[in-house]
Amino acid sequence: MRIARELYEDIIAHAREEAPNECCGMVASRDGEAVKVFRARNAAASPLRYEIDGPEQYRIQMEIYDADQDLGAIYHSHTRSEPVPSQTDINLAFYPEALYVIVGLAGGDPDVRAFTIRDGQVAEAELVVL
Image 1 (cartoon, helix red, strand yellow):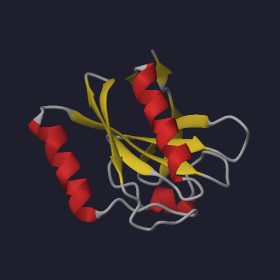
Image 2 (cartoon, rainbow, N blue to C red):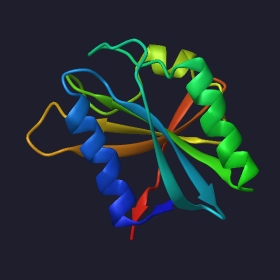
Image 3 (tube, helix red, strand yellow):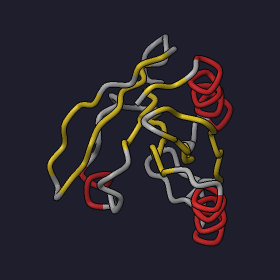
């Protein structure tokens, strides 16, 4: 997925603002390019996991689909570990068409990585910052 630097930086800012808890949100896309970041509330309010509030997730998804866009990515942060999908992340990856973007904050600089998760199989994906 291609993403404008402004949207990319917004995801990183969201991760920093929510630390030490994980942040979460969704990214709308069109033709493989991110067009809008939707910040969501982490209903789990936890530094170890995230959960997008159900009604909020539904509202975001309807806004994306009503705008004739795609769910390009679901993002969250890892505040204490590497930005790779945990077993919980893999188990809860219900959108195989979306990328899963993780912002790692454990080191000095944010480390942002993207993955596909399909049928429990994880593969690193390309996130091109424009």
